[in-house]
Length: 162
Image 1 (cartoon, rainbow, N blue to C red):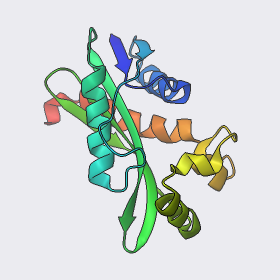
Image 2 (image 1 turned 30 degrees about the vertical axis):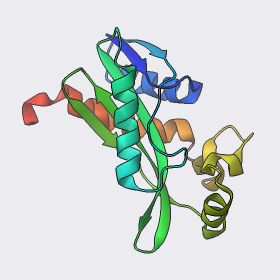
Image 3 (image 1 turned 180 degrees about the vertical axis):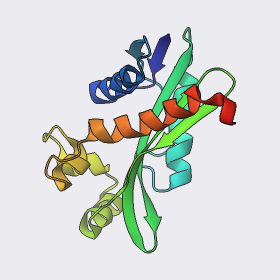
């Protein structure tokens, strides 16, 4: 299977590769820079999902499956959380999965809103993303993306339950 991930980020590509490997799917996986058509720092679940689907759609060129990965922040019960969404697109249907989410400290959310920066800016150079820093390495960004990708692939591989 030929798969194009709508990103050149090596962490995203590796997470997608690991997810396909976990299902024993033989896949050639490449990355390609594509637009998300959402804000640099998405601030709602709708925007996060839309960004992942847009990336998957734009990645779907000369391949069997386009993959979009989008992370962002959303408000739930008065608190802000970060999550990741993965969308797979086969030219006709989207198959999607979401990752676990974690609370983003209020101080950082305020800074993001006031300074227009992304969450990742506050954790640069640490190699594991905000989730890795906040969980002290127990879950890193690659594992978070991997979990969402596993769920998206599960939907792809179980079409009979549609």
